[in-house]
Image (cartoon, rainbow, N blue to C red):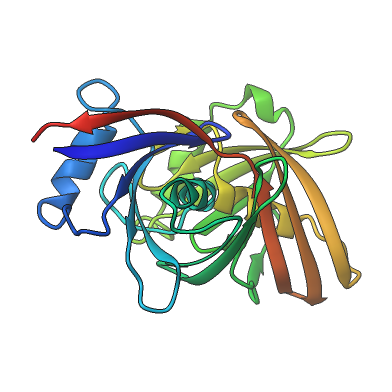
Length: 257
């Protein structure tokens, strides 16, 4: 019997499991694929295991719905809230993820301020950006982003010769009056999702001006609004990157195996 909780962060949804006792150690990939199936399983974009770590409050192990591993920004915010509910942390947390150590703080409104890894490299061409924010992101600014067939257009990029072997997430971006509007196709889910935290972060960095200093951006996803703040310290160098947004527990349950 495995206890789980379901969380969502701006519509990006996750199955959360306290795995500090290592109850999930075998057949992980097949389990993840089954649990994430929206017709035959619980249904989710991914599975997050909270595990022990020798030099951090906990380790977050994230699996996409296809069983592949990556870093997940929205999932990390939910993981911090889940860890607090387990009594592992209070309002401040330090945790290990696949891309290294992260810090997070829960504010008085229950939003999680997640510190992302520094970025020191951006690939920029005439019609796209490519930025790695713990997960790789292709970013293209478009007109009428709301009318796009995101899955069709994104697959042409994700499965192109350049990206097919490693895969990439694909973000299409529209410019609103006071915010950027983002739609994301996620590698590992192989579909458009309601929100992608690492994608939102990458898009915010792509929108930085030429001047060095602090920037803040509002990003609208299909699942809600996220904020990103960061310092531009070099032509393609960014530090103090924070992804800010909510996480919500939806329900809890038991998996009988």
